[in-house]
Length: 338
Image (cartoon, rainbow, N blue to C red; front, side):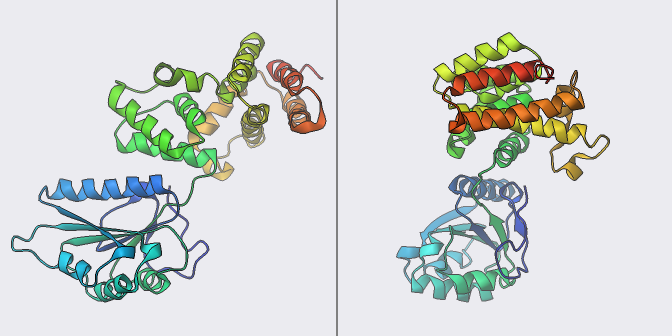
């Protein structure tokens, strides 16, 4: 997913890309606080450059403990002309010596050398960043902002599989993200394990096979069963989730996410996914989920969701009963209160 150019900054002249779009350039600024995305960016850059020339020389520098002249020495042409990748960490803590050398380097980047500057945020090094973003040095910026929304984490996981040339079913992707949504590093590791060990297209059964203990408590399993009208299965899944330590609040949130998406799709028939602010697979799934539902039933379900949300946040004494009541309304496709 590409970053939004210029968000929260002065005008930027260089390309601003998302991590999955990272590509070599004379200078690559890797900005933002999401270290997992930054690590993936650095790995992709190294693999791309090494695929072009296996003789790639890789050097690592720390900007806060920098010795004057090191960057210019590492970037200077070698006897055999091997391409070079210089990775600089801690630019947000740069020493004055590094900033002086980096500004000098921007004025005349070395041919055949890619310099990657990792800056996690803050005002240190602002003069360097401003010069780079203004276009000096012919660089690009890869924005690695923290991923907070589940939709962004699904985009991240989907990109991991796409870049590896693998296909993952939407339900499997949802289950995987739901199981590891609290830790992007764990989600990335889970994606890599599935890519390495699972054969063929990755479906929900494969995700369960590897991560059954995590996935079984997924709130979306409860919501999927209820929306499909499988009342008994939904109650069993709910009990399993609660016994495994799941909190009632995110379970209601999972219901809300799916029901609101269904309502959005039902109310805008014929609209494109982009116009609804949804991914195509979300629209396709919502259309399948809408089978057997009426507009009136959706309205009742939305009211039941509001009541359940208040109940699990303290409006009622028994949040479990409130969840069971919500499951009943949803499984009856809104007809229970009609």
